[in-house]
Image (cartoon, rainbow, N blue to C red):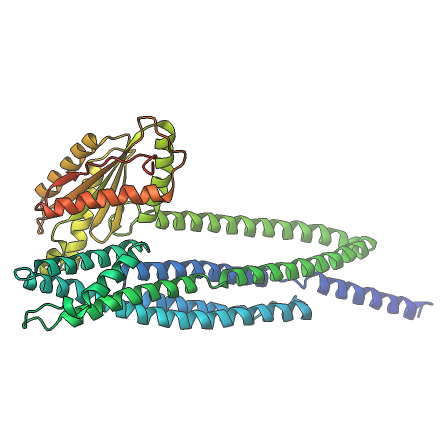
Length: 479
């Protein structure tokens, strides 16, 4: 053996061990594992948004079918369980911090489950009373109208206020509603007709609607205010910190490997190719993720803006647009008109032809509205069989012409269900100088209330007609 053989052999083994150690530490961060964990967090964040949307949809529509809500909760629980499998490159301290945050999220998930069960229970009770009370109250009012017309009108006013409170959630209606109910529950207010035993049952259902509507609102707000999204952001933040630390450590070991490889001529090419390939793979992954995020954002934006059934704008979009347009109308001293449309006797269509045909009727009416308005006008589904059309730079008279075109087109439309519509029109005219300096949410409410009052007048006058509200409001209406 040559002199120094064992020494060179030992040195070679040390270099190989060092290279092996550096190579192992430089590859401790698994990109697939990292992006898989990030994807799981992103899925949870998307499901949190979907859960809130489902809660709001169930709340405002008083749905009796909670399968979508149960499905979202089940998916949240399933994907949250995947988060407990932490990537191997995290340190012990980072794992402990993440497990603490995951435990907090699990506690919030339990609270959310409990609130969801309470929400379903309250919503079911409210849905039941809302299904019974309008019919029973209307029948009671008709039965006592001949002998006790004043009491019948008070019952009808109570029914109207309950509808307004449940439709718009105007809390200023609540004291008046409770006062009406207390007045009707007085012993002297009971009908004197012996054939009217359902009076107390009607009053009880009205009381249930008021109490459970308020309780349901509180449960909904408590559910939406759970800080699950914040905890998820904290989880993502702590995980990213751990990933960046592990990535920095891996990069440091990789740098040491490159420095050692410089001594070994054969390692130079390997180091250059490895860095180039790693950079290309990371750029491809980033580009793919950016494209997925962009597509998903566009999809969510479209869903938020449109109504699934009719293809018209959603109620939320119409409110946002109206707030901006009213400010512009006031600023530019313009005019804007509001059309509130309601399908006459729509319940009879559902009862006789079924809900599928009822949906087709709503789709045809939506298409008819779009065919008779300008591109600058906004048409939205306001709720149920009600539609809202906003006409910028259109006076009350011009809006009346548009409304009449729509009404005639709907009445003349072909189809198994022949329906008519009633239309209420309100106008906000700022063409004359006014003293108002700002546009508040109260002005939007005032404009919509005026249109709704006009619609109510059209209904009272026989339906299948338009009614223009005499009162013209402007941004200085408070003056």
